[in-house]
Amino acid sequence: MKFDLHTIPFFVYKVELSMVNIVYNCKNKDVYFCKIKQYSMDLELVFAKYKEQTIQGRYITLDHIEPILHRLNTNNQLQIIGKSVQGKSIYSYQIGSGPIKILLWSQMHGDESSTTKASFDCFNFFEGNSNEAELFLKKFTLLWIPMLNPDGAKLYTRENANSIDLNRDSQDLSQPESQVLRSVFNSFKPDFCFNLHDQRTIYSVGQTNKPATLSFLAPAYNQEREINSSRLKAINLIAGINEVLQKYIPGQIGRFDDSFNFNCVGDTFQFFGVPTVLFEGGHYQNDYDREMTRKFLFFSMITAFKLIYENDIVDNRIDKYLNISQNNPVFCDLLYKNIKINYDGKEKIINFASQYKEEIIDGKIVFNAYIVQIDALDCLFGHYEYDAKGALYSDEYGNLPRLDQPANFFLGNFQFENGLIKS
Image: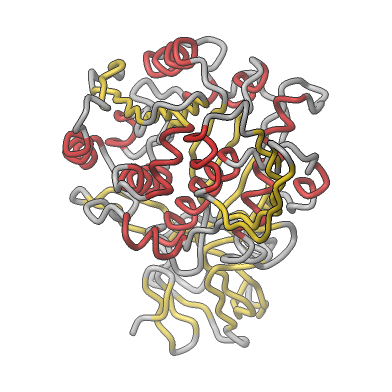
């Protein structure tokens, strides 16, 4: 790294060096040549300090986040940028004054809230006046839409109130929420876009028995899935994020399929020449509320800011990106093996699987397990697995599991309630 003290203002020079530790340096006329070891934040401590404690779990609505947004609105950072189908406010939260502009949006799908929680953790970080936050805010202007689909969030559905998937509306722009996002994109003119989502529990990393706790994608910009300079920046950024996250959740980072779909927002924005990264929060062991996933999403976003800040995205990292295994839908929530049934007077050994449905009951998300596959299973692994070792199946209806029935049954003498052994 080289600093020309004649061409770089002193305050910029100090800012750059405050993020690094100098190992040694030498002075040669007017130029400093420094070998530098990059500064590294303790992400665990940072997250623990700035986690937004008032929002937890999966059901996050506008009612939950509005008070926090107003609390954070100390200097007119908050704006209402549009209305949803049902007239709910769509907010933007803009911070920073730097030349690099980053547009981020969360809960485009109403039932995908993990990145919303992580976004508020990031807001607290940026409002915390740490040295790192101040440096970032001098480098970046961040425009965040924390909840693009407030109607879907309330209904806890992927779609908006018109039953339209906003991530398939990028060309028609038929919905007010889609129009809001496109209007912000056109007026803000971002240098990077972060498209923040959740993914289902069914995804593994490749063919392994490790869940895809986080997944990423640098969307294609054409049918041929070619790589231009814009997409390469997104690829390099993901490769850098993965390198950091592997230290925390080794083997649990996946890569999304990059088939081109012009109706998807990320593909469209990549087509427009803006490096776009898809973030997907997935399953972590025994974390159906996705509080651990939330933490790792926070890690990934802070790491992304750091990589862009340091311009550590210029090397060609295509190979490292492609070495991230693709997501593979081979998981189920609950897998039962070696079950004995009586079928047409004959004994048979089968396997079957159950999956949780997230259902709103009394304003809360309840995970109810239903039988979804019997015998010929698509899933190879279960987040919970039980080997019945030939125990006989029975339930209140008979001695055969049936598709779509609640996962309440007996295996031998063991009673299962909502998919798990009753304690």
